[in-house]
Image (cartoon, rainbow, N blue to C red; front, side, top):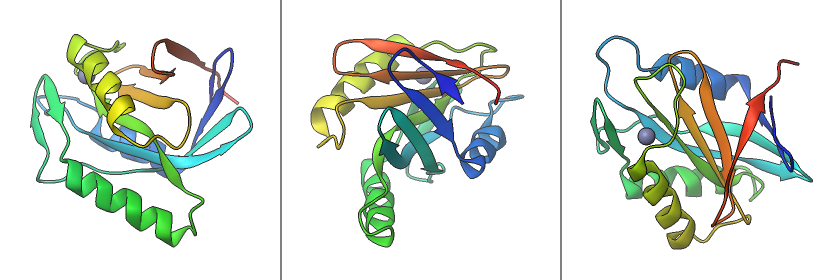
Length: 151
Ligand SMILES: [Zn+2]
């Protein structure tokens, strides 16, 4: 569980397992995908994380996900949940212990917020590091980091 001033983010165990699996240990490339879930009041439940596809472009220090594959995943889960599971953000890995967003990450975040028909008035930004993860929500202007709280 990650706590912020305005919101709480709760990751499903399956999502945490995806993060762990792709954690950028050794010489692995950056990996990433999208996050789907539900919003109830100020709680964000992250229920699904898409896994990288062969169409994504990635290197040790960059990741660009394939748009169409991600859209398919969004549409599929939306239909299968009768419209209750929606797109809520993005995740990717960094080869650093305690990650922070890079310049390209911030630009991507901004574009993503503008381009997408956002279901909610924010976008969740998750960066998986080697020791800790960076979790924040972005409202189009401000990035608010949330802090890990064990429950
Ligand atoms: Zn990054």
